[in-house]
Image (cartoon, rainbow, N blue to C red; front, side, top):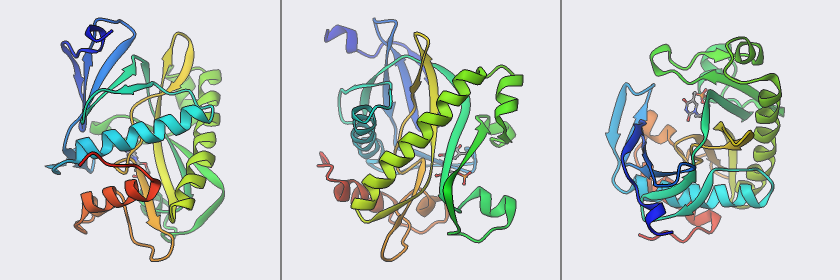
Length: 242
Ligand code: TMP
């Protein structure tokens, strides 16, 4: 079993994580790196300890989602920066839910930051940095064959379920879950949540002060990026290794 969990050759290198093959065809090792990117990889900086913090954060969230009925690729954390996951056939579409307006929707539609969406707004983006992740619809997903209509509707359903679970969890920690992005893949025919959930891929505002506690601190040069990530983790009850 130990041998099975060993990282072998590099399968691919993303902007913040690297994926390695293992002896088991169905398992990968993901390594969370300290690289932090913004604006579709235009800016990349190292933030010390981010990989380790996000690995623990992601393990906690993925476990909660699994416990609450959202199938995920998460198997177990192997070390400070490494996690064992199921190998998915990834769908190149990013599922975003917005509870309040921030980021691209503010620029695209000229609404005020903070505007509430009730019910939450669901959006899709093609995962393609050179095209700057253009917004697409469920019709594009079907027409281009990125996923079937059935798969798309399952991703939609699971993303909204995740929002309900996570919104409640962050609320108890004094944080508003403003928006987040999920990526899914296929595992033996089933739609399963892949990639990661960390402050790199969501927006979290302090309920009392409105302070940003997520990657917008990096995008907007606000400083204290890792301090904010750590604070969110501690507020959720995560006991950080260092
Ligand atoms: P957006 O406001 O840039 O469209 O992003 C919405 C949310 O999704 C935000 O929390 C950031 C996250 N996101 C990513 O993490 N990576 C991406 O490539 C995109 C498009 C969004």
